Length: 297
Image 1 (cartoon, one colour):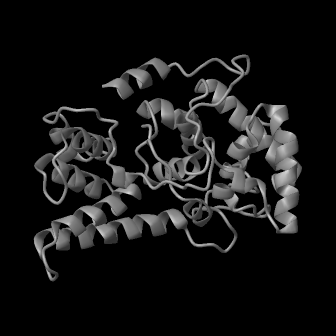
Image 2 (cartoon, one colour):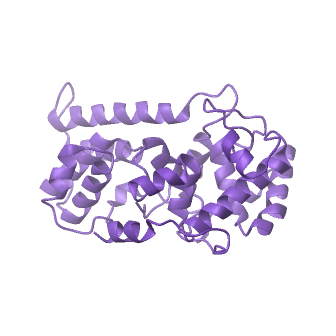
């Protein structure tokens, strides 16, 4: 899936998923999305509140942006029927596609009946951050916090050695650990770039709590993923979050709410859809052709 839009930097910082003693942000997002969908249903059908189709569509969209498949289906239905929004089959198809990719059976049925560009997401799904440039993420390069400033300078120095844009690496770091070098996730991911033991071993990181080793390991993995997915940023980010095997299995960004929210958060500040890659690092994913064909459908 390619999301043609960007979410605000605040969501990126709020989405750090592995800080010590921090709540499970992904779980909070899922709960909030479900609550927004319930509110939208009430507004659409006038259950306990005045019936308001326009408000319902707004609430559905907020929930859909957080990855709720029911809200994605419901919003698609509104676009397909011109209820609360202007009828638009293409935008309906795009919403049904998102929901169906998460296993929503009704959305899959509707997707087969609605014609249109399945990538034409509604404008409400796109929240733009006007502070960033065409690539985005410049605000990540500056900090008044001395500890964070040292980490930023370290990434700026090391990233070019791995042919990774520092802004991409910092956006990943902000989401993974919120710049906490001692962060540990429930899945035992560790350090600034949240390396699980298997990934740390794969890229020769002996101490994941050492900032230099951890950053080098994360950069090495990003470089490998960029080569494997031929510079596709969405697939690279999905691979970093869920593993390249999951991306291959689902022929695209996996239908996990956490992974989809993760990709959207980072793309909110790193706007480039593609990134230079070194094809000598590894052979490309064997399913890239299938992914491209799926996107064109």
